[in-house]
Length: 272
Image 1: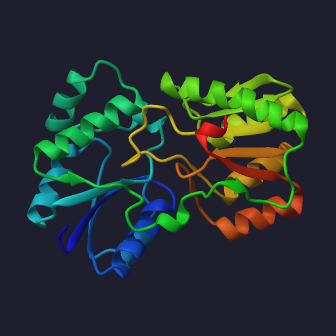
Image 2 (image 1 turned 90 degrees about the horizontal axis):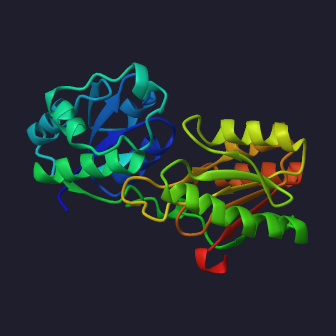
């Protein structure tokens, strides 16, 4: 890798954390930020930044080439609902969209990565400098799931993997071996709220990677906000996939989980 790294920044803290980690490793960070999505504070942690509208793929590529960037990462997502109302595709993006068989997350991200590579850019894993954020295996909280919750985890894990394979979402909410909510376009937090309200209390939340997921640019993530949302609806357990999930605000997240009695378990797929 060269001395520069290109950052295609979506929403949330992930782009900021990546930029800080890359800078500590001695890299010059050239960022492409999305208006209405990327946090403005990203400007503090990068050497160069270009703000674009969602869909300006040609401008994105041109910026990286002008800055002589060869290696790039995609960090942070784009609000899915925005894709229906506030996308402004340029000619390159339109050409790409017309070739897609469907507009699923996986299809779109893989097509974008392929287009970047055609232009001579190398797509690197977004976890390149932040391996400390990857979830280790084990029960991460004081409270462990009880026997009934273990059953819910095993049941929900298979369902979550299947909806992932269909590229619907990555999260399911379960109670007593019954699916009460499936994540779709609304995102994880809203799926938890909906499922928690239906379950009343004691729900089990399972979030996993999709079987076909390209972890270079699409890594499941949880954090303090996830626990706070679960606490709102009195959910009991969060099950995530070890080595394939990012945990943000880990210390505060687990401290809060311990405080409200939520169990957080990180499991390998082979355990299921």
